[in-house]
Image 1 (cartoon, protein in one colour):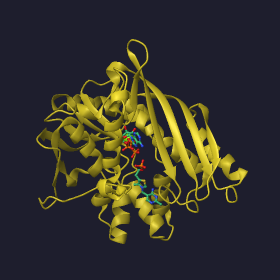
Image 2 (image 1 turned 180 degrees about the vertical axis):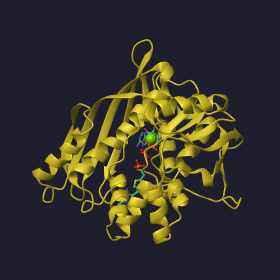
Image 3 (image 1 turned 90 degrees about the horizontal axis):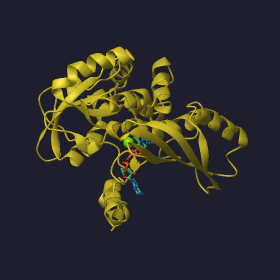
Image 4 (image 1 turned 60 degrees about the horizontal axis):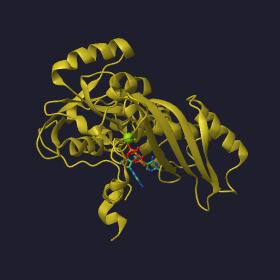
Length: 328
Ligand SMILES: Nc1ncnc2c1ncn2[C@@H]1O[C@H](COP(=O)(O)OP(=O)(O)OP(=O)(O)O)[C@@H](O)[C@H]1O
Ligand SMILES: Cc1ncc(C[n+]2csc(CCOP(=O)(O)O)c2C)c(N)n1
Ligand SMILES: [Mg+2]
């Protein structure tokens, strides 16, 4: 059978079932943004790893070495934020084409990587016959009662995101369509290359009992919300008109004929947090979040009992079949 037939998540499912019997009691493995390993009586170690491959995750001639260093680490830190943790240390592995990657490029990459100020404790370095390959592992910690998982959503929960969606996808469109650079396309591309992991937000939301499930948005809400729904055995309704889209994306989408909300739901790489919240405590959470961060949370839908599926309430009331990024 070809990998394409079972897809990225079909393959991960096969790996998970093949290795489940080896997981020690009380440890949590494949299935969430981080693995969870007991670390003392009331704390856990969170571990996550992510791979970036040239021409799959980035185009070398379009992203600067500094931005690539920063983005590689940001997308990994985002998985720690997604569980409510705080990053403690990182490991970095690099596969570099010898003829094309010079040490000046490496210096700029490491400057970008350093910009988050989280220690680098080890890694591995090899040559790569074709294209740059980057793997980062991040270790973080969290109090056990603060860890948020994908399987904790409940019927009636509000579905919430911590920031606008689709800017990164707009930036990718601007890159792939080779749009003329103006201040708007430049800013969208900057947002695609320099995502901000919502670390402070994640740690704060981890401490809030009103927050039930949480993850980060890497493949797009259309796919990522399904992970929460499958893990929690719930259905959801998402109101397309409530998807937060920046004025920048809105006007660029108007100009080039893109569907901004479709990009926002399916484009991915926003690295905002996607969470579900007890509806009775949402208003209080919103007020406290505003006080803490000077911005608001965005409600995009709600969970309901039922088979894992998203019903989209469209602007004209119709449902749509939307899917986020899939590697195969
Ligand atoms: N090759 C693999 N071997 C073991 N576990 C894997 C493998 N690939 C993915 N996983 C695990 O499967 C789960 C889902 O992976 P996925 O990559 O979708 O999560 P993520 O890191 O949050 O998302 P993204 O990679 O889009 O940032 C995670 O728990 C991850 O650790
Ligand atoms: C050149 C180029 N083509 C396409 C994309 C889009 N893209 C690649 S991986 C991914 C999901 C997150 O990655 P992962 O699931 O591996 O963490 C997305 C949306 C890109 N960034 N660059
Ligand atoms: Mg994630």
